Every structure is written in structure tokens, then in C-alpha cells.
Image 1: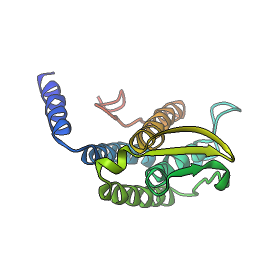
Image 2: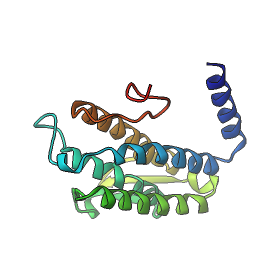
Image 3: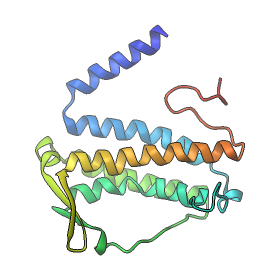
Length: 181
């Protein structure tokens, strides 16, 4: 237990000494390691499985997770993002290799763009629209946190439940899982 407390204390000190941009890059890299472990566990032969009629299939959910780092790019590349300008494409990548390739490409592009941003850019406002309607305006750093990071962690948790229901060993995210003890 003492080691765990030390690790979190060290991590907190490290983060507080960083710029906002450095902290976001570090957090994104750390979460990517965990996400990759989860994506590796999705059984290809079960891609069409879903736990409920209203749920996504596990293949679609994993594909959505793999695509989410693109929200860093969407947050930094323009003063607005309009959902109406983006067709709703619901990809399901056919293999684990394809899934990981998409995740790695999106993650690499996101981190590269984020490394070029400074705290001033991250604090600039961005408006999110649906057609002519402004849904909200907030600092870019908040859109990145909410739509890229929190959104990814939310769906990764959902994916862990899907894996559990399929009796696939769930990897630990912030410590060992019940399957790793």
C-alpha cells in the first residue's frame, strides 16, 4: 500500500510541475497503454456480439474507442467543429490488427498535434455546432479532456463489462483486475 501511495504522490508532483500541454500529452500516453491492452482482448470471432438490443456490438464499440483520439485534432485544428459537416460513419474494423492500426495512427497524430500546442492555444475557445445551432463554446483543453480522454475512458469501461460478459479475462487498468490477482 505504501508503494501505491508513493506512486500517486510522485505522479501528482510530476504533473503539477508540467505545463498543461505536457500534462495532457503524458496523460494521453498513459491512458493509451491501458486502452491498447483492452483492445487486444476483444475476440474477433465475437465482433457482432452485443449484450442488449440497444447496445453497440463489441466490434463497433472497440472501433469507436480506437477512433476517439481524433478529438484532439478536431479540438485544435479549427475555431469551430460542426457535426453537420461530418458524415456519421460507424466503422467496425474487421481484425485486431486493423483496430490497433487505427488506434495507433489516431493516437500518434493526436499526440503530435498536442505537442505543438501551447497552454495559450489550449485555453482558446472552440465552438461545437450542429448545423446552425451552437451546442456549446468552451476552452480547447476542456473539449480535449471531455471528448478525447473522458469519452475514451467511459467506453473503455463499457468494453470491460462486455469482455466480462463474454468471459474474456479483463486486463487491469489502474491496478490488477480480478483476472490478474
